[in-house]
Image 1 (spheres, rainbow, N blue to C red):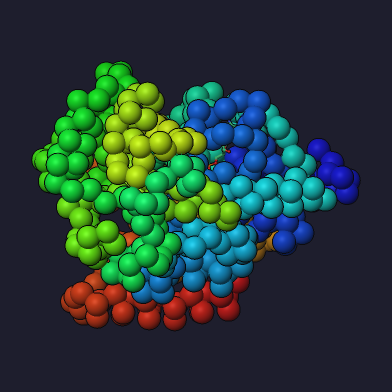
Image 2: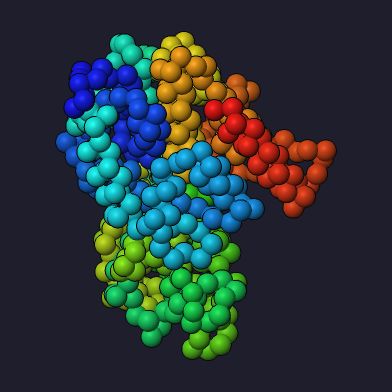
Length: 443
Ligand SMILES: Cc1cc2nc3c(=O)[nH]c(=O)nc-3n(C[C@H](O)[C@H](O)[C@H](O)COP(=O)(O)OP(=O)(O)OC[C@H]3O[C@@H](n4cnc5c(N)ncnc54)[C@H](O)[C@@H]3O)c2cc1C
């Protein structure tokens, strides 16, 4: 198919999410022509809300920005490799303490505008139901890949797809939060100053809240969903499931009051709900750690019991979601190519990574390697000592018995000389930086 420049299409990319947009950018910056396919808004995933590319479906935080955190190291590597996702994320950054959070609307609009209008891209607004039979293809259709495409992928990879469920947190209008009760502040920061809005609770309020949460009606799960629920990441448990594990579990988890003093009393609250800024204007805030599967009316009733949120206006409510990914250790190479058909690459959550930045990172590598094939070069393997290479090494390492998606963390690296704690982390970071520089010189 000719592009607007009448050049032959060299690579097809399926999915305009975080991985797909990054992969496409890496291709066009190397002057490669792309057929870019996205099914929204004609067909919905059930979680995305509109037609924009690179939609951040849940939190607007893309993780820690600190250089000594796994997520910070991942970002550092991506920036060095020329990540588009990082460039736009920093451009539309909103205050969020040490985390990198973005104005999701401005972020997605910029990426959509740039890629949709690009001369090297033919944008196809259709659901792809079969993998093209010829040419290079990058599959970046995400955790909510359409069922027809999943069927086609199942035939292709010859392995059973795995699914599990996650949950998203509600979003409230900032102006609807009562700031005579709630207060601004960061953990261990100066009272009254900081990025988060905090809703403090005393003991009675907390116990009544937990009781209501446990009794609230939930969305009925199918038998399949119930069995899949067992595969939840513990870090993404619905708030009501956390509450089930003991009356204090929330105030030692997402409602931890440590490092805060209620300005009204000068004392540490018994528990506390944190709200994080969600857009540049500061008009929307999300409830940190409040992913939930409660029925929508119940969410409104129970969450309005949170002090300061009696009249909260919920702009979006929480929900459960499906996650699809391939059995990468069996089917993918460390260059992100399908073992049995190397013209096909996988990137993003469908490849077995977890998280926004991780998805974009694999998009970057798939885009880079597809470009190299076009240019007649060998695809490259990221050094496993780097955060990106470590992740890819993890998802393509065939030793996993029960494979689940993985996010950036220091646990995926082997310990050097038995070092532990901060020293271990420091050695990993140093090795990653050294290896990344060598890799950079090679590409
Ligand atoms: C509800 C939900 C909440 C999440 N919350 C977070 C979070 O807060 N933080 C975090 O770090 N990660 C989160 N994740 C996990 C993950 O990081 C994101 O899903 C991320 O967007 C994955 O990037 P991706 O590019 O792989 O997929 P996506 O960003 O989902 O992009 C895939 C694209 O492919 C399109 N598509 C699917 N099938 C087809 C088809 N057949 N033809 C054409 N187009 C197709 C989709 O419409 C979509 O636009 C969440 C996931 C979900 C589902």
